[in-house]
Length: 287
Ligand SMILES: C[S@@+](CC[C@H](N)C(=O)[O-])C[C@H]1O[C@@H](n2cnc3c(N)ncnc32)[C@H](O)[C@@H]1O
Image (cartoon, rainbow, N blue to C red):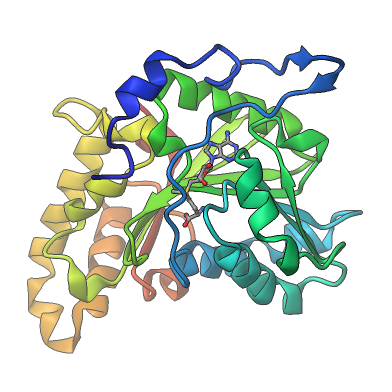
């Protein structure tokens, strides 16, 4: 069964709070917003987004008074949270990472992995347990919600960020070979990033299956994200001659071609060589 399997049954019974609406108080204390879902995770699954965080977000953390990162929905083991600590820790003095899970049993299960303040685990949901993180990484969490609930969850998490903070919300396949995420600040979405092991795809639109909840149902003719993936496929086809130099060269050439066509790519070929592309949200946002 897929991670999203039988979700419609769960969603049908969700309370407004569980669907990510504004925080509510229950019995005098804040309730964790959301619902427990399957905890599937894997070692190294989130390496692509972590690499991007290390390459692009270290200054944001270094410049903050308290470099706190929340890993929302870490799943059935602490492995990807600990990897995040291992990747960002050497770059950011005083880094604190808190893994939040809505499922208390998953928090109890990782008790031995706690090493506060460097790494801690707590019960929490979209309200972020009252924390004010500089970065939130929420991976493979929102795809299990419906689109409206996911939009409210974005709003709730954005409102909880520290000043100048960033929410990184996305999905990937089981082994982390195909990944996509949206970066948002307090004002709204900023960028969409696609990242893949280029040798594994036949064309860029293969990544459509990993689009975040906010986009996946909008990948239809007439919608900007569909136009973007079509343009990417065409640029990829036109760069076929570069395959002899390896699929990553072909990817870089396709991304450069998209930029020349006016697609607002962000970053440089240093990122694209990793099988990444980042594009401004305004170019792919649903209309
Ligand atoms: C598929 S796992 C993802 C694990 C890990 N982040 C990864 O990408 O490998 C999703 C986890 O998110 C948790 N979850 C779902 N909604 C949540 C929420 N609102 N707040 C915190 N955790 C949540 C579920 O309990 C589940 O353990």
